[in-house]
Length: 637
Image 1 (cartoon, rainbow, N blue to C red):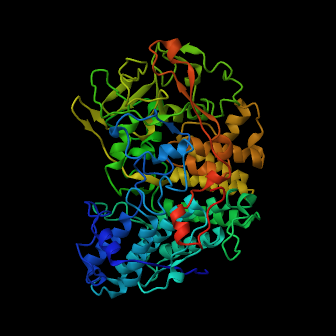
Image 2 (cartoon, helix red, strand yellow):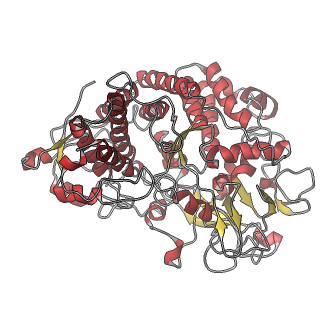
Image 3 (cartoon, rainbow, N blue to C red):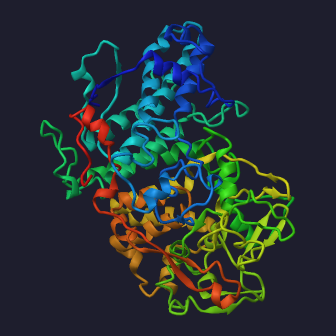
């Protein structure tokens, strides 16, 4: 692996600032209030605290407004303007979704600082740790080897986070001494291929370990170490990176061919390379092998104390794959700030019980009508393809019967909500839907004035939909309190990895095995195989037999399976589909109405705009380019 060594200055004041961000759990514990690296690496305990400082640099992906993939696209929408400081932590993601990104003060600017975190600071901390850990004498060699592997992983992940947002970035392999010259500090961006190779090289080193120990296969001490990096995590992130690098945004994309460094070096390779898919395929295969060896498997709901019917059991298998804490499908869950998924659930949940009103349940995290149309019919094919499903009249009212799953008997709703796949009812709630929780089954009634609906100028769903998938089934609300079971945010789970593998298999002409892995995910979701569903119900029954057709199926399968988990935003970009899909209008239901006919009327909420190809990457802040003329701006900014 070729190393591109760039060094940046770290001041003592900055080190002091980073060392004082003390929290409670192991991800948040940092060294005591000291000003010298000598003290930070004087003994085992202090060195481990510094390692946790490196962990503390991870973004808060479980918070809906700190994860760049959540409120920045078209999955969710919110009323505008917001009416109170209680409505939001930051406007940044909503501004991006509304086309208000800018280069003067970029939104969600993890390059410089956002939510108090800069990915470059995280990289600097990792470099400090790696450059000083050998000074610690009272740590066992095997443990030192593990710590080094963790720091290398985190260093790689911080680079990856920036790469996914900004494209080509500088690589910071070593920190520069304080007496470095100004020219040494004026770094340049490396090409996409160089950055990917560097990150993957670090992940390989982390997985293998310097002393044949490296990262553990799985966490053994679950009382204190859950959330720390394991070998399956490193290999899964490597797989995600290489699938991204093989995807159309980075593989054979001519849109950014003219972006070059000051010395003329091209940053984007516009030539398609099939070998990138071969490499991604091998990485996915190794990651799945490591995960399954660690007894990670697709989650299946099993609660003897809560016997349920088959439909509810499937729904709970889907929901709990995300929000049952430390469940069997989880490859990497982060708890950078444990309260984040507490906040997330309050944003997602409406008022469930008509006899309990608690304003903490905001219901603001509102899926769009576009997302409701994404899910399959009960026959496992898109609503536009199912020859037995009434697509033309999908907005006409129907009355539910006892045979209709997921809808209250006798309730009126649009045809769009009938005869859909289990993931639709597991992921989303709507006026007339049902919501199963550990303490009972609740009926959602969301028309104006009803207990789940809009009652005031704030804390309501602007679209009429609610994100059931992200709410843990053990949440209980009283008039004065909400008891919420926090869960680690699933950065990677096995269903995600299976679909990445299926994508790579199809791109390398192994359609049979690709279908096998897609069908594993579909089976857990209560659906028949792709082959059976398309042959029996699709207007295009042979679609899956063609590489392009199967690619389309895999992509929609992924958008459905990973809905509301912060994946869609990045997938639409790497597939180069954002320019098409994020230029479509945002619709919802007329939530201020109180009658069936009036409420179930589709209304335009916003004409979304995506400037392609500019908006595929974040802008680098103008001030950075003024200070460092060797940094070139992303195209269109």
